Length: 166
Image 1 (tube, one colour):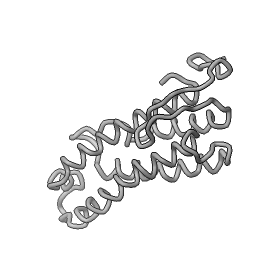
Image 2 (image 1 turned 60 degrees about the horizontal axis):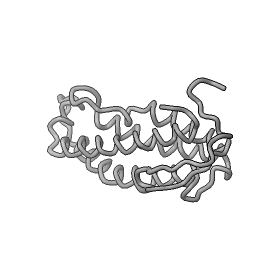
Image 3 (image 1 turned 30 degrees about the horizontal axis):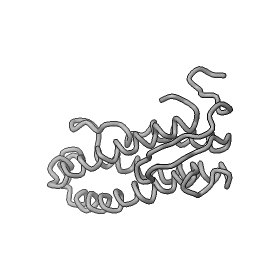
Image 4 (image 1 turned 135 degrees about the horizontal axis):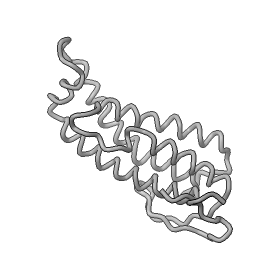
């Protein structure tokens, strides 16, 4: 067995508290473990789950990264098949809840607001400078940081479901 992995035969069930989902009981299953691993890798390798330094990176890039989680989650769930489930105590159900209760409301609120601001950018102003001049920038960054914290907890739960220690 690889270092850092837990033996699924020895673990009967896990208890988790996942943002946008709540408390749940989860029992290891090979198909769900593989899907949890794929979702974990996707999540922790995105800019959206890393702190967005005020002087580095664009908010637009963070929102695009969050939006990309939809497509990859859908792909992972499709490829994993119905065995990952859609109920509340399945990897599929958890992933769908995080998308619909966490990411969708955030993106539905902020994407159009940022897009409206971006359309007003003067030609000689860089996208970074224009974002910094936006009166909603600080509030968006604060909400983005809160969401990042929730996604970090979700990623930690996915790591445990996959049988690894993150």
